[in-house]
Length: 300
Ligand code: GUN
Image 1 (cartoon, rainbow, N blue to C red):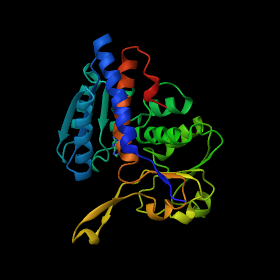
Image 2 (cartoon, rainbow, N blue to C red):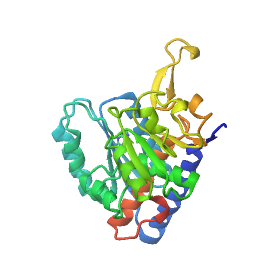
Image 3 (tube, protein in one colour):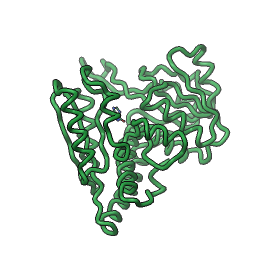
């Protein structure tokens, strides 16, 4: 069997056009222009690319886009001061501080400084709690994107065995909550899990978010499973020329696609969904801030 390749790029385009429609309605019917502020500290090249894409796509769906670039040696106090200003700014409905921040800054302290009402990453303790108990609010972008792709592929997820590899606050833990909410039986595996291949072999749904290039092999996959690869790893590609690199996921795509029923590629799978979900979350927070019911087709 050769798996269906899940086209995250095209799904994200559809989501962005739904977002643009809701932005248009918020402007026309309520005089609200949703605004997203993206903050980057330092010059990590991968983060720079993400942040530039986020700002560009924000403007493309008709939202106000604010980009703040702080130098690598900016102090924690400066960053906290900026977050405080953005919390108070009425034109801003979403605040994203690109992670990682430089080592001299406490990321948790920065996250906790963000007004939960504007926390489009859903990283603040208040929003993590809301997701856990099923209250409306923003849902972490990457897990939300994965969930949308899974629902689109499989319909109801009820009763399916889901194995998440990776227990990060950014992906693994919120993904666990969302899949539980959709009535999956969820296992969260991680670097200390014993017999990982056997654990993954039980999964109808595999969500790979470990950050290790091509670690999950085709013979770990249950025939007919749906595989969502969150990994974005840059590896050397000498076949393309000296010093060249290519992007690969956490799943060994070549072997896994021969076993799975459906699989996301890297690039073009989960990646484009993350930014589209960030835009969707900004419409959600802009609606909630203005006491409007957020659109149901943009969230979990
Ligand atoms: N760095 C990598 N992914 C993310 C994300 O989803 N949000 C933020 N704020 N930083 C990131």
